[in-house]
Image 1 (spheres, each protein chain N blue to C red):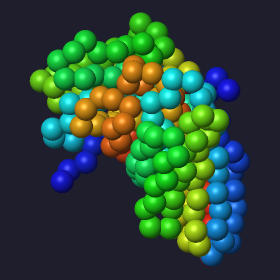
Image 2 (cartoon, rainbow over the protein chains, first blue to last red; image 1 turned 180 degrees about the vertical axis):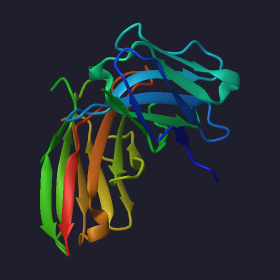
Image 3 (cartoon, rainbow over the protein chains, first blue to last red; image 1 turned 180 degrees about the horizontal axis):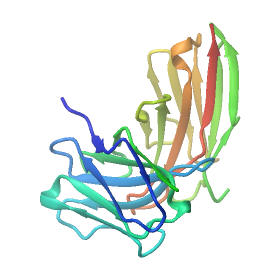
Image 4 (tube, rainbow over the protein chains, first blue to last red; image 1 turned 120 degrees about the horizontal axis):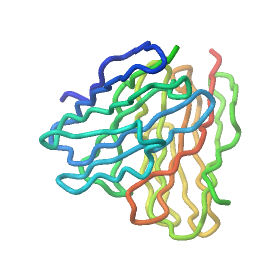
Length: 115
Length: 112
């Protein structure tokens, strides 16, 4: 079956512009996670969604970052007024349910470069 | 240990060599330990999810062990092949908050 897909695969934007990153999770997966990996850093949790519950936004680094998940499926991560430190690979993952014992299935990522 | 630490940071081995790496994590409030393989230009792929102290899991030539009391997990690769070249990540969950804390990974290069 289809895996997690993300678009765009690469995005170059100018400092100060807004960007939207999209994630299509595996059908039937109720949990969706956003991570980012900056150069030389580990995977950094940003936000997760579980079904209709309120999302856990505790990893979002600033109020310039927001995410939504429509209809329990597709998610969009929005970064407003991008800064150079936002340059990273943004990864989306989904799992059958949220919980520590469920493996996560990752998309190919979006490489964001802020110039 | 407050965070997830992986060692070594990188490793170069010859085809056919067996190798292992370590993931260390806080031993309190353990819920789960994940291992993922991340090949260049691909998505991270789950290898194992381990939840019980003493767990041993195996997938082909790759196996993992778990010691939750002392806070470490070992990943073993028997008879390394060039296609095993990847970054191996571990991630730990220390509470019922559904978030994984990730290590920086061990980068493995297998020379043919």
